[in-house]
Length: 243
Image 1 (cartoon, rainbow, N blue to C red):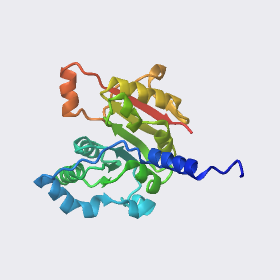
Image 2: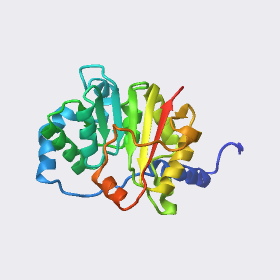
Image 3: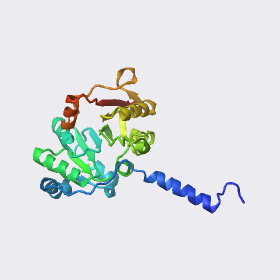
Image 4: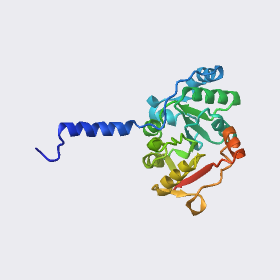
């Protein structure tokens, strides 16, 4: 037998292990009913502001008619902060990714009420959106705020901020583009900092390769304000793509 060929049972085990690794998700889809406002946002705005994997890079590139800088937010929750940013930074185009339909409906409804038009969204897995839809060099900023910390140690493998995921983001950013992370879990912040300081092609914008002050463009959420009152910490990381 050729030594390079694995026996069938070993090959099957290897394939199952690879498949298992591919299927590890950083999120769990939660069943939930939409509120009246969320459903209205979905019904009235998805057709014009929603993007899908099937549209590929063409859908991403044609999402707006102008060529303003594009900001991608991954996992925006109910979308309140993203709508605030799109309102305050009207000179930019914002594209969000969220897997939970009620959150997407909320974002669309809030954008409708705010009367803004520089916002689009996917309702899908960010890993697949990056792979299938986002062209290289097309983003000026990627922001990931308060991703699920998966606080139990055995679940840390589910955390979104991992070396392979950051490497998948790097080519999507233009040179000089920024990745901005924020978390209120100190242990996750430490992992984020370790991953980003080791990531190829990025430069920490903070002094001494540490954490950065919260930039003015990231709004304080109501939960963050409550956390501050209770003495909880929040850690921001800003890294610039240099190659």
